[in-house]
Length: 204
Image (cartoon, rainbow, N blue to C red):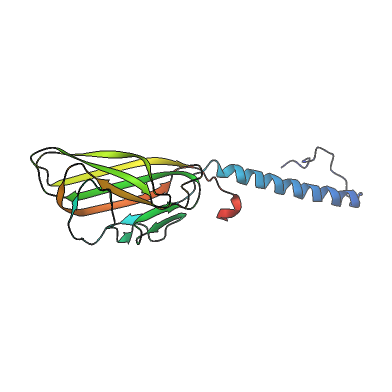
C-alpha cells in the first residue's frame, strides 16, 4: 500500500510531531477506505436469507369452491433455523425481515374427485397484514377425469419497501367444485437472490 494516502511526502523520523500527525491521518484514511469497500461489497454479493413452511401430517378432506381458501395445512418449518425470514406455522405465512430481491417457491399436490370435464384452480399469494392480494392469480389447469393435481412455481419478488414484515399466505379458489380434496404434499419457501439493501450495522 502506498504511504502517500494524503498526497504529501511522509515525514522523517527527525520530525516526531509531524510524524504522529501524519500517522493519525493515515489510520483515519485507511479506516475510511475499509468502510467504503465493505459497503461496496454488500452490493456485489447475494446475502443469505431463507425460510419456509412444509407439510407432514394428513388433514381432513375439504371442498374447494369459489371462496378463496387459505392453505392452513402447514405443520412444520422447511428450514428450522431460518435467516432474515419469518415463517409462521400458526398463521401459515412467511414474511421478510429486510428489503431485497427474493425467490418464492410454491409446490402444491392434492387429490380430489374426478369429473368428466376440464377444470381450473386459481392460486394466489395474499397479504394478510394489509388484506390485499400480491400480484395476479395463477390458473392451474386440471384435466378431465383427473383425480390429482400437481403445481409448482418459482417467482422473483423485488421488495422496495412494503411488504417487508407483512405476512403472506397461499390461497386457492375455483369456479368449479373440487370435493374430497386432500393435500398430499405442500411446500412454501423463500430465499434471497439479490444484494443486501439494508445498513451494514443491521447484519453485523
